[in-house]
Image (cartoon, rainbow, N blue to C red; front, side):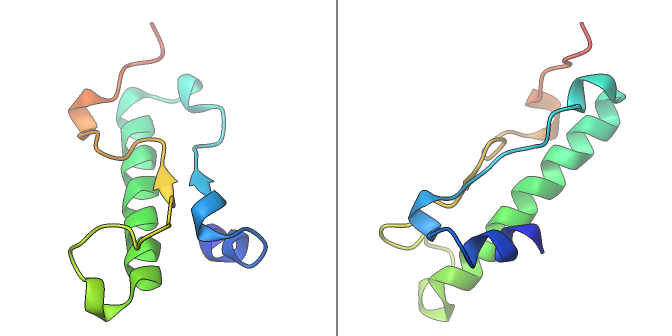
Length: 82
């Protein structure tokens, strides 16, 4: 919902999805789950923007709708509590 609201005022090629601060103070499993949800949400909206003709091809041309944790598996997210 937040990504779609942001797209009403920011072009997709200018929008970068980033987590709110505060992940450091969460248990690692919770922080990983939040990052995973953020990446999944960005992927869903990216697919909506691309439309049905570009299914599975990634971002549409000229779109930089990315997420800070994109491409990271849950076990690759660093434990920031250390």
